[in-house]
Image (cartoon, rainbow, N blue to C red):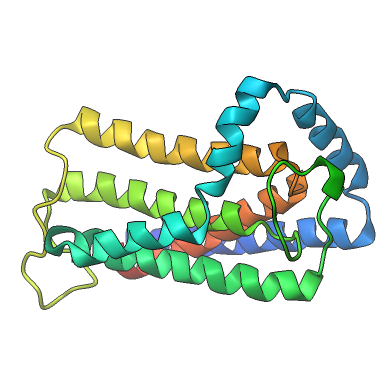
Length: 226
């Protein structure tokens, strides 16, 4: 009964994320999101200062391939992190890349006013590639940090025939929680940064997070069986 309940919850979360993405997409396509997007975006842009610009401009670039790819490669190359972190995190990033590259070409939403961009970006706006990629990378990393802390570095359930893959785990609960919260803070800041630097609408970010939640649910189901 408990297993069936957990199964139902997983399906519900996956469906809710995709349904919310579909609803946001419908609102965007019909133009009904204009009031929300313009209001939230104007408020965020009004916060611009030289000091915040100096922080958020380079931060917004930290979601680019030249940061994401090295993170995945390091986790894959280092033997102690390859199985417990590298493969699940890389799978998350590849899933994010697949989703947003296809969806951008389907929706073809133009970016906000180019005159207000603080960074150079090309292509379409919806959904936000940086937001979904950073969310799936760092949320998966946070989940794995906490999972490996609790399991003391035992191999992930997906690797049934391998006894122990890693000793790369936090011995301290406080350290594991701190790093996990840093990952989630990064996700929130990246979503905010993409609107702040002027290259995305707020609904681009919200839709990306909805997709990320659904994708992460079935990915953790595969790797962690939970």
